[in-house]
Amino acid sequence: MEHPDWRRGYRSVDGKRRSVCGNGTTREMTINWQDVIVTVSTTVGGGAVLLSAAAWLIKTVLTNKLTRDIETFKARLKADGDIEIERLRSSLQKIAFEHQVRFSNLHERRAEMIAEIYAQMVEVEQCGQKFAFVDGFAEEEKRQSAYLETHKKLVDFYFFVEKRRLYLPKSVCALLTAFVDKVRKSVIGINIYVPIDAPYNPKLLEEKVKVVKDVFDAFEKSIPDARAALEGEFRHILGVEQGAKSE
Image (tube, rainbow, N blue to C red; front, side, top):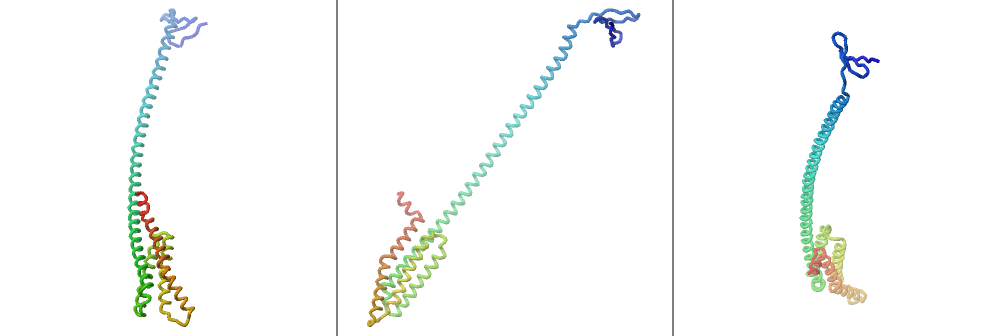
């Protein structure tokens, strides 16, 4: 069966290619299928290789660019992180320094307060002891003058401590209050009972002797003990005891 060849001037019969001459005759043309297959394979294969090469090249370029971008981003991220860390470290150091300065100033202020409290405490004790042992037995005018002076010192010391309680532990404030009460009660007792002269009232005289004896015992024992306890607390607050132990 003859198959028409759509190419002009050619006819194909029995798989053979023939050319049509001008006079209508045909001339047989032999087709080399091996050459055709090789040519097609070469053309198609070359295109595939070219596409593969182009795809590999694009992939390589994109991969390299992405790798460079990632490394750049990582470097920038590390640099920004280092800057922020350094900024945070500097801020923390500044805060620590400011805290240290404030604490140092507070400790210095506290030490000044304690020194002043202790100095006034010693003066109050000495003043109360002088009244209890000496001025409380003087003549009326001198005794009253000494009593008013001693009482004023006690009141001034009390309010001096009250205004500075914030710098001291509650236990120390309690000890200071107890110390002032002991001295005040002793001074008041001497001022009330010493002037009493009742030779015909044994019970009142006995009470007077007991009050005077208790006052003497207080200034000899309980009041110095209270001052010593406060001294120990003050040394602890100031760190004197720790320093002495470490030496």
